[in-house]
Length: 289
Image 1 (spheres, rainbow, N blue to C red):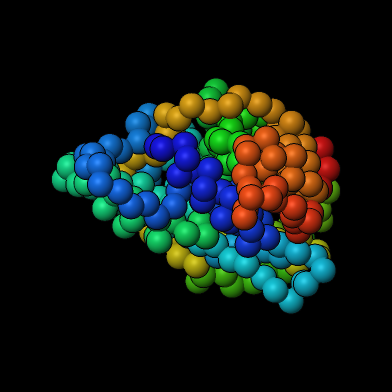
Image 2 (cartoon, rainbow, N blue to C red):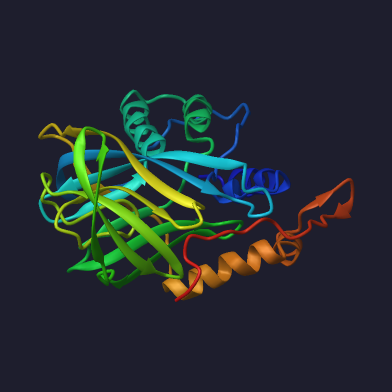
């Protein structure tokens, strides 16, 4: 992908002063050069057995708690591996493969895919990949794609006595403190899969709803469906920067606190003058190590 295009769109999203500035890496493009669109390479790592769809809501700027953003996410459950990602991003990947097979013009394909991906989250979380680890791929504003793996640490849960119907399933509550936030989860015994949205897992049933006590992050199941036998769980083959969770989170925080040095390093100017952007709202889901 043209690096200038990636840089241009990242810059545009930063001007909008939103945490979603890292949720896209492409922009509308025009030009006379005709090239055939090529799909991104992928490595298939499992076959999907069950799809669980979640509505994720979150507060980007704690100064305005009434303004919530949302994404629709999907948890793909395979025989050995699960993948949590943005549903629209997954749909765009599927169309990307179709456009490549059709040998569509690159510019036409890009301009079809970008509106679909707008506002989607770039994060992909793989549980039990590789070798019982937890692997994350994500995007750093103005910095490219990153990948890190960490130990799959089980949250310490305390199971409660209350019940709640979520997406047609009778669920029981459970409590945990994880990465600086206190959570209440609702899990379904009738779905005996020890998994859930984001990095959550470890209960005797699938987590269908979970939120922190400040209601800054929440995930609630919207639908569950069995997958067809041809649906694969994959990881993209990209030129990732390999890092650690702590270093990646530190990089994000540094960027949002002061994006100007990186903008200057990229040589971005407007009307002949360097960009001067104030710190951007930053409310990460992980508040501690």
